[in-house]
Image 1 (cartoon, rainbow, N blue to C red):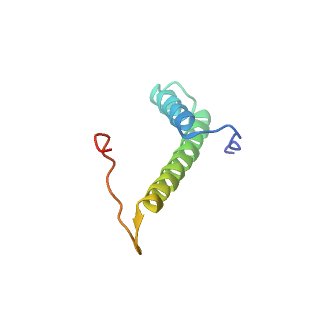
Image 2 (image 1 turned 30 degrees about the horizontal axis):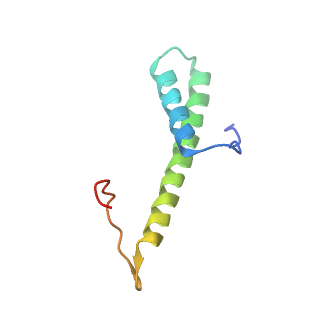
Image 3 (image 1 turned 30 degrees about the vertical axis):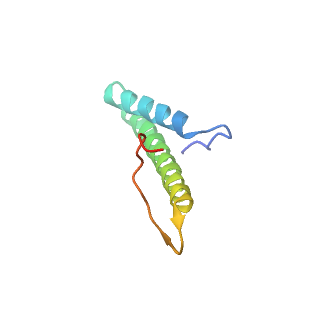
Length: 80
């Protein structure tokens, strides 16, 4: 059963946790049942990270809204 999200969860921690899951699965040292549990946790983390990214994209699009249409622009760190 997937664990409940922590109140202090953030995207960066989610990515770090997901990386740990991948390393654990790649080790090949887990018994089958434990591997399935770890995989389920990885899927849940991946879904949560994807949702965070989608939410961030929506927020950026809202900020870039001009007139009656949204003009999504790629992020360019050299542009100010």
